[in-house]
Image (cartoon, rainbow, N blue to C red; front, side, top):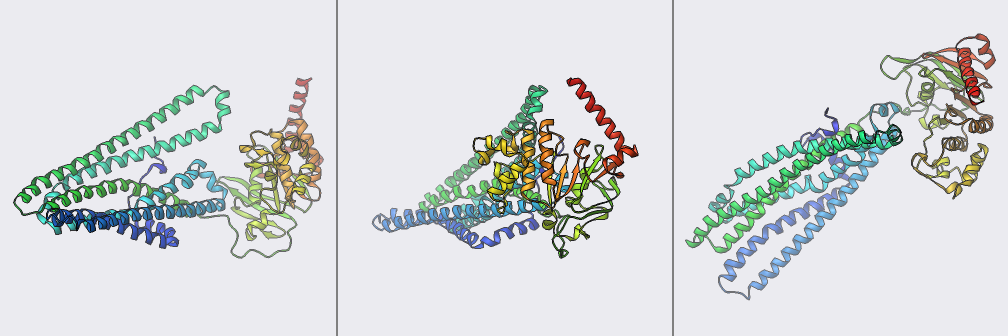
Length: 596
């Protein structure tokens, strides 16, 4: 399996990435400061507890001064309360800050995704982009809540314990530290192996997500062609690899933590062996020995925590690199810094020697020129791949032309504000996209200016009202994901209602009737007359019958505009259009003969 970028883990610390991440923490610096103070206070309380036990044993218990022990016990209780309060403050503040940073990051990513042009989406799978917004941001949350800030607490605790132990008895401290080489070896072994294991697990999760997205979306095809057993076998294989990789990861954790505990116990044994002898020789107090044992046990916890946090840091750095790569993706199609001033646009469209290629110099449009006057109805026909839909993509500035220009009312569309340009149009596609919500929501698309009366008027005008009113809740009826509970024809009627509700100057129909039955097409054709009245209309069609009454028909062939004219004029030329019409008429006649 090729390594995908979702599987690659980078360094555990990258200064440049960390600076950018800290930028998202900057608005919440007060919360970070509170958490940092809480971490230091909690670590200090943890350091104080063994020493207070030493004092209690040496100064009060050994001397039989039990009444004075009450004050020390009260002080110990205060230290415990401070430790609890610090831990609570640290956890709450860091989690709150992490959630706020996640919110800001997800908002920034989604806002950027909405601005990116369609070329970016042509190159990047949807599943991978969803991973950026979900799991990659979650990894950064782990960094802020259990990573970079809390590591300072672990380091402070480690250094503090070492200083206190050396201050109390440097010989016994050296005995306790004698096991550190073993800790270093075990930690390096764990970090190296669990890193590889984590990489494999992450890569297999990406494969599982991609497999599920592809096959659940295409479940109808899976069932139709009886691929259930084959797909199950493939999923079972990926899932088994994921299980085995997780078990391998569990093995490393299962070895590491007991190993640390064993080394910690070894350190305790050495302290008891050496320190016990010193106590018997009256060279060390019993309280100091007990304190050393407690400090020794607390010394190894931050080490194991930091080893685990190494993976958190590494995953977060990899995730942040992918997130910032997305955020740094340039927006190639955007409004100019100073948009051209204009009166109300009327929709006078001119394609002036337009060339365009999706990939380098593989031109799908070559030297295309034509004019669409306000109120004119223009049909565009041609074989599949001739460049019909590309014309619309360029007109709406989903892509920018390579050579030539497109003007609206004499203004190059690259000089217009994108919102002003796209407000001119309503686009009806062959594949209608409906959103989760209600019927009315899918017609008005969140535009508060389109009230219920206008929604109903638009639905009635395109003959969508009868089927809508038959639904249980009418216009308030819920629309399932991708409109799965509606027929193709019903979804198409809704798209017409949507287009009419926005009252565009220019109506664009991209093979809008090619997926509906003949009866529905007749209904839509009738609705189109009302929809196109007084509007500039550009219609791409496979069925030539839907554009025969257009004012002008453009015929594209292999990216070039080969013919133009009315239906009768093109037939008289006996060229490409005539052949298309003859071929389609022959097919339609054969269908009629078969039915009869």
